[in-house]
Length: 547
Image 1 (tube, rainbow, N blue to C red):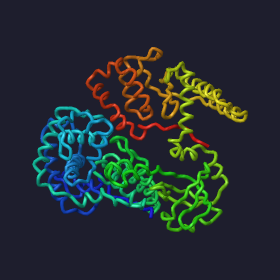
Image 2: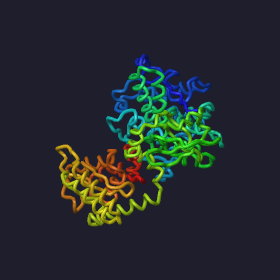
Image 3: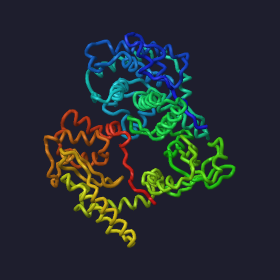
Image 4: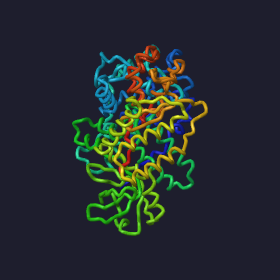
């Protein structure tokens, strides 16, 4: 019931032998499809891809786009662009899911470009321009290609001409479309998960992003493993994890959010996908079962879960009272389903103690409390305390060797504001004493940093960022470092979105970088670009564990 099909033929290996061949072959085209056997329309779109390839290589002036590219990557780009065209023709709705979600977020179909003259459900040069930019910035990450240039626009217009010529006669790929649909009343979690899996790991739109990432991890597993069966089990587990936790560089959305977007608001399962839980992984006791459910207790927190019998082939395995289990769970339509790997363990006291005392085991369920009023209340109190401690400023600029003491002092200030019992006061004092002893080790060239209270997660420390803040109370601002520090805020995953937005909202008019051509482009599209650059770290969550 819980098995993924892992596609083990990898693109880079598959086409290495044809590196010098000028044509694109059918197996290269099928790399971007959710099926392996050729559909009736694939020959048509393969021929179209070869025409697109001719455009990509038509002029020397385009060489900056494809510098140091080998034949396989150029072939892939041609197939990628033709897949966009096929998507619109066939109604598989991937591209429309992206532009409609972008419009909901930013009131525009696309970032970077003027879409005043833009035709929904049709091909647009802006789409092609954006897709080439996206492709080039996901197929590699050494250099960032600007989305606006005359050469790039010229390539896009020429590719558009190829598509316009084919628009009226191109056949719909009904077989492709079927993979991006799901029954209106599908109750089975595994079918729901398969739909997400198809979008993230078997679609053209995310091939150079999530698909390549998965396949690289799979390759590594099979190369390092001496046991093929064990490699498959581990590969399935990794794929299951990525299905539920990975975010795409486009809009930093999860697979379940893309599933809802592809189906559209009117589809009965759209809301069910948005309500699908994150995946729970941990140690569990079994406290019995009935004909519908297996009653599990999370060892670290004592939370209880009812695991549906529909997801378990051998429920009798849970009957042994001496056992505990390492298992993954996902909630789909108000039922908890088994997902990932299931391992039966002896009730080992050391494992139980580790689960109950190790904070990592407890925070695995933090997502269940993110919308909790209790968590919100705690975070609000911490925020109020930080502001009071720091002269009503949400950010403090500090020497590197002052950061630890500042953190400890701010925590002590907060603890004193609480009505703690004598036992809790003693525990808090002990914790702070240990915290003060464990000094952070910063690189020798780091002489300053900042502490910022992120209203969505709590206190965070940032280095290499002070010169992005020309604040009156910032003695470390250096105009010569300003542009680099601004880019650190926008690009680096260890700097939160909220900190970058605080910089923009309060200091953009005082920072010369935002008056330059690139600076204006980044400023106008800051949120989209931070989703693209920060991806998994774009969103901040409360770092509070309820016990």
